[in-house]
Amino acid sequence: MPQEAAGFREPIMILRRLVLALGLFLVAACAKNELTDPPANLGDFQLGFAVVVADNMKKVPISRDATVEEWETALQKALDERFKRYQNGTKLYNIGVAVDGYALAPPGIPIVASPKSILVASATVFDDASQEMLNPGGKGKQITSFERGGDGSGLVGTGYTRSKQEQIDELAFVTALRIEEWLADNPEWFGLPPIVRATEAPAR
Image (tube, rainbow, N blue to C red; front, side, top):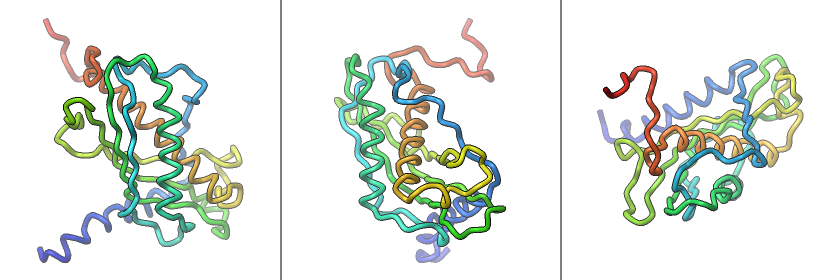
């Protein structure tokens, strides 16, 4: 494969994924864990720092425009708010998030399409002391976040019911929650016993 073609392969795959997801009907992840709820059990986790980059993000053509600064600011705020709740941890961990692509539902799309806004991002987590990346295989964990329905029914695209900033803030909130859930699903990273998966036989 020519080098030029290989370089475009990954961005094209991201855009395809976003286009397919944008057209789904009534699909939105329901984030039940609000910031006022008790934090998940993350063992010795305490946030050292979180870094967000959006320089290489891709946008679905029919999306509202959003700048690198808008995404980085919103995600930084959402990560800080969610993970600064962990005050009792005894070790520092750092979180990195790269925005891969997004679609912000615009007004003017036929209501029957009911487009949902979506954010695709890749997350990494590091042990601050050793600078070791804890992700399996040394690769970022790709996370896809849908906004929750703006009118509560799921029948009207949020381009009609939310401003661009409200959509960005919502997707940032859900993405931070998804990262928290991902960390909680890997307790062995934070000094806790690993979760026994359904496909795993318990040790004898």
